Amino acid sequence: MKTSTALKQWLRGIIGLLIGVIFLWLAFRQTSAAQVNAVLSQAQLPWLLVAMGCYAFNMVGRVIRWQTLLKSLKSLSFKQVGSALMVGYAANTLLPARLGELFRADFAGRRYSLSRTAVIASIVVERVLDGVAVVVCLAVGRLFVTQPVLSTLTTTGALLFGSIVLAMLFVDTDLGKRGITYLPPAIANRLTNFQQGISIRRRAGFSLAVLYTLGIWILEGFTLWAIMKTVGVTLNWYQMLVLMGVTSLSTLLPSAPGFVGTYQFSYTFTLSLFGYEPAQAVAAAIAFQVFLFGGVTLVGLSIYLYLHWVKPAKQYEN
Image 1 (tube, rainbow, N blue to C red):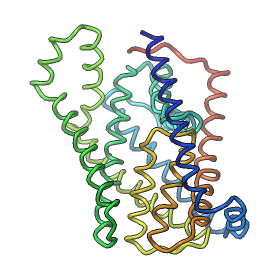
Image 2 (cartoon, rainbow, N blue to C red; image 1 turned 60 degrees about the vertical axis):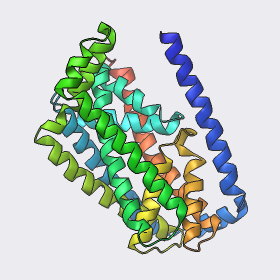
Image 3 (cartoon, rainbow, N blue to C red; image 1 turned 180 degrees about the vertical axis):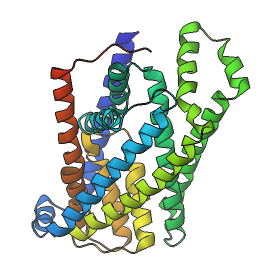
Image 4 (spheres, one colour; image 1 turned 120 degrees about the vertical axis):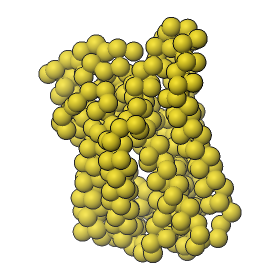
């Protein structure tokens, strides 16, 4: 069983790397490293600092939101939740195909004696909230930008997250709970833990999580706007919504570590709709990855190494 799971993760990682290479080639096919370097050499550092500040507050909001979602499992401190989240985000940057989400669940489960399946469920709820926010951004922005691909992306995103929401609602109904009793014990136990992780939707804390999500994506918008200003790109509000939607949906694809390739291509595609050069788009993506994703990775990796050496993890439930 463990061998099969490891093999699937390796295959997922290889597929992610291949996808990243393909999209990176597509992005750089329209420009050159010299042109991108020229844009980066003229970057406006004050705007980059603004972006980093907004992103720091964004991460604080994400910690508070996940802390709220985890309360249905266990009451954890801001420091505990923040450590797990930063470690998970660092792993997402270093590992391909978003395997960092599984790493985050494993890390939190081990350190805080939580069911790993229940933690995964809380992460699913977190990602669904983000997904709905992204689809709304893209849907509103698309009203002002005529582009068939945007319509396809909006519809695909709505169907994807809508299906996940319906599946979560069904699993948490009385019918779903009765159905679980007919499954093999090992599977039934995991689904029961998963139900516990998504039970937050029936609690008052879920409304808070929705409000935190709104704040998170407002900060995300300011972060992205500042990054655009860093490389000399000025977008209006609906263009920003489209850019947020496309670039965020691109991170859902299995990709190379740090979303290399898919992220560059999503910027190139979107900014080309608004008349900007591919070099500016690739430079913006690189600036975001190096200074924002990179900053989170350094913090998360430092936390992991410190806790790994100083405070070994406990065992966890499935």
